[in-house]
Length: 111
Length: 113
Image (tube, each protein chain N blue to C red):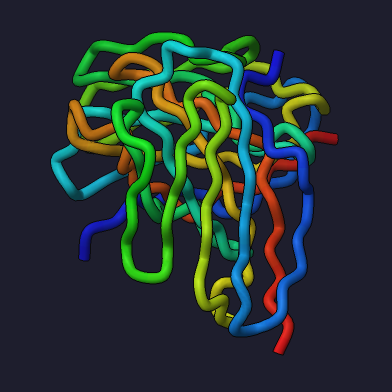
C-alpha cells in the first residue's frame, strides 16, 4: 500500500526551462511534505518542505505547491540547471516519527 | 564537519551469516532511523529510535534488529541475512521534532547470495 506515489519514474527537461515533478498521497493525516534530492553514491539531502496548512513554499529556484483537496503536491524548478540532474523523492511526515517516501523520479537536465 | 557515517559502504555476504552495519552521527541528534531503498519502491523505513534505549519498528522490520546504547550510534543487525535483504541501506538522523530535515548517510550497498 503505497501512501506516497510518484508516478513518473523519469523526466527529461531542457536547461533553462521549468521542471515539474509530481507527487500524490492517500493519507490525509500527513502533517508535512518534503522533497529530497539524491545524487548517485550519496544519501538523500533535504531540499524543501511545506506544512499541510500552507499551499505554497518558495526557496530560490525551488517552489513546492500543495493541493490538499486533490492530495497532490508538485515541485517546480525554474530555471533548470544541469546540476539539478538527480533523483527526487517526495516524502510525507506522519505524526512526529515516520517519514513515508515515494518511489522517486529521475530528473535529467539536457544542455 | 556534521555528518552521518555508515560502514561498510559495500558488502557481499552469504545467506545466514550474521552481519552488522554501523551508523554514527556527530550532531548530537536524538532521532535516528534506518531505511532501505529498492527499485520502484523508494525508501522504506526499517526501524527508528527517538533516543537512547528507545527504538520502534518502521514499515519493514522483519529480519532486522537495532540497538541504541549510545546517542551517536545506531547499528543495524541482520541475524540471518536472506537474498531478499539485498538492497541499498541508509541511516539518517535529526533533532527530535525536526524529522522533516533528516540528515542521511552515504548508504551501504548489501548483496546477499
